[in-house]
Image (cartoon, rainbow, N blue to C red; front, side, top):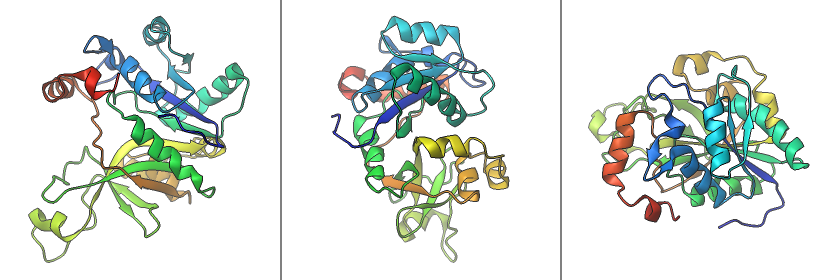
Length: 262
């Protein structure tokens, strides 16, 4: 699954223990393995270099215990992007090499597929791309109104114009139930990749008004003139935000090892 590339990629999985909705989430058991281990093993199917970046001794030890790479980072980070920015400098020093591109793999997506990581890596075949993420087309009749599932508006080149928790664009003179029949809506898949230099730049930016309004940090980058290239995946992403999410995932996916190709 790992492909040759002129770029040096580093996969970083930000992981913190504290969570309002699901404390200790990275260490939750899924079919006999911790969530963080499942994310790590899936990412390793696509990436040669993978590290967990955490601020918690329990997560640090758990990763070490299964033989994974792990870096301790500051407790002060407000986002996974900020944690990745600190971690890449530490990882470069530890590995003795610089990395061109950082892949930010969400620590609460234990079923991330290597094909999805390969797809976001391919965005950087275009040398002008600074930041990339994945989107998925919403099917006819699919719920596009859930504010917990951000939507993305794209330009003709596949760059993101705006991220919103609302369903945009608004389809005038049409019943809301028919919107997905009248327009192609894209849902955001929370996998990011950045050129390393760009990552270090965007984490120095102050929060933007659109970011604050939507509580979506990627709008900060757009507000400051950065372009975000998207790639369209047909594969669904299963994010575990709460204990109930985990139980729902278990009812739909009973054979974890078969699903995860492990």
